[in-house]
Amino acid sequence: MSTAKTLPAASPAKFASIGSPYFGIMLAVMAVVLILSNIGASKGVAIGPIITDGGFFLFPLAYILGDVISEVYGFKVARKAIVTSFALSVFASICYWVIIALPGFGDEYGASKQAALEGALGPVPQIVLASLLAFFAGQTINSWILVKMKARTGERTLWARIMGSSVAGEFVDTLIFCSIAASVIGITDVAMFVNYVLVGFLYKTLVEFAFVPLTSLVIGWVKKREPSYGA
Image 1 (tube, rainbow, N blue to C red):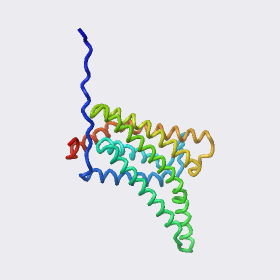
Image 2: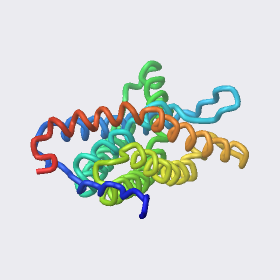
Image 3: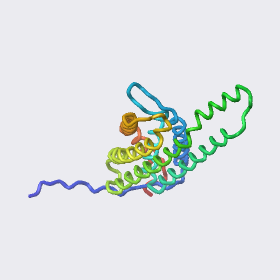
Image 4: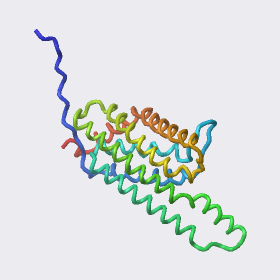
């Protein structure tokens, strides 16, 4: 007589349609986080031996929001959020360029303000290019893996979906971003570049791992309040 136990079948993957205010709120926050991260990333930051940039504390939030959107609404809606955030970041970068190009006051104060704007926002277009390509590739991979895993496991093992997709998405994101943005930030040698990539990848991934319990709670909260979830 066989003593092997049969594992319970996974419940079908469920997703919600866009019809409540929750998606719009998360999309707005994701776009703002990406835009602010692009500005912060123009500043190189050295904390002891750690090399990073000024947007390091913000960017993981965009991926946490991406996990929530992918899990609740599915890949097509997550892709819409990624493309929309991408477009708004491009728009912000164009606005920076226009603001810098506009003629300012000719006095000493006006000149110092112009120099400050050029110093703070001038490098941003290259940072934006790096961030957008990295964000688009990393978030797309993150969302695709999470949804594919959900198709196989249904509502079970949410933690595994979040962690597994985060490792792949964050690695691609970090490698692309650092490769393009390093020269603008002031990273000039191989050792600094390797430090920058490893610190960025490990930091963002570990932050996402640390927030898995909170991310899971948020996902559960949104699922319960989305009338169309699983309908």
